[in-house]
Image (cartoon, rainbow, N blue to C red; front, side):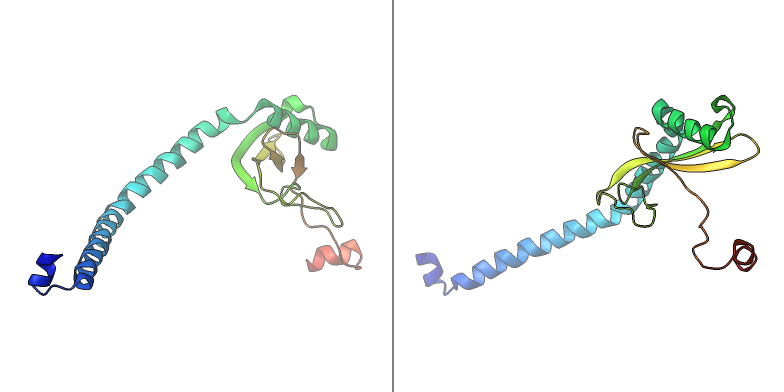
Length: 158
């Protein structure tokens, strides 16, 4: 303290210099990190995407594939053994109805991890949404006729 008084140095000035120096060094470090980040991030994203795509089919639980095949089999009267999973992706659905609630249906308001699965019998393809284990299975369908028009008229217009 005597040194400061003897050399007419203000304590506030010292604190300001130290504070500004630390802020400046933080900014320099942040800029350096930001400059190196894009190449690293894109490389990591590519690796994750490639890995996710290559492992996706092997990660699909049998219960999910079986549940989807069973639903198509029952609805379309096609043996489940003739149905093949053709496209799949892991998804996070916005609610317990997997993002496709029916009118007047109440859905849990929580994110649901699951799958989007396309199944084909080589003539037709059906797309389904499921939870992670295939306990909730919903078929994506074409929009229904919700107007009061006869079906033939709405089909022509729509």
